[in-house]
Length: 113
Image (cartoon, rainbow, N blue to C red):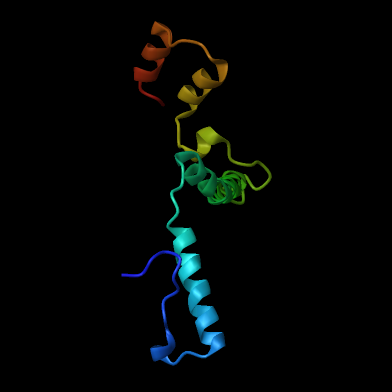
């Protein structure tokens, strides 16, 4: 068995100097990839792809919200309530940030003309 200080004899493989150097670089690169990484290093590695995905989702969401609804509403963009198809009375309650009263419930149960 070889000691750590002795070099392995690769001459039977018949490698020229260039191939031997490439092989050594490949082995060293694999050894560096298998190095122990801390959880913080793993999270830091995901920061850039996560930000890119968030930016793409935000761009698509803004595009969907500002897409015109049709010829009658061509000038007004969609709101979040419109995009989520929240009924107008409920959207008004949310916008006013007030609790639902008994009158609101009775009004919502009344048949609409």
